[in-house]
Length: 80
Image (tube, rainbow, N blue to C red):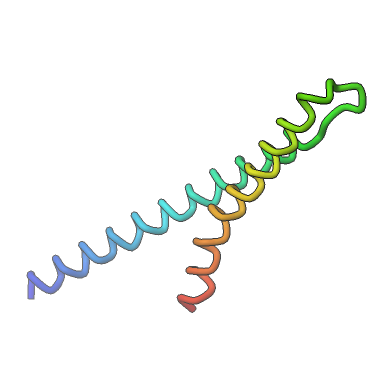
């Protein structure tokens, strides 16, 4: 009986650890998306060569952040 309880404790600890990792991944993804929005917001008087670099980096950050956020959200929705 003690062995079964140990297995349950290990499973619960693993579940909590996975949830914590997923939550952290969502927050990091949201921060990366916010950075992307900041990079895309370019002042009208900015030098042309920097505009293209910032916009490209901003869209890359938006895409990367969305990829980080969507994974755990889909997992949570499918768990049920």
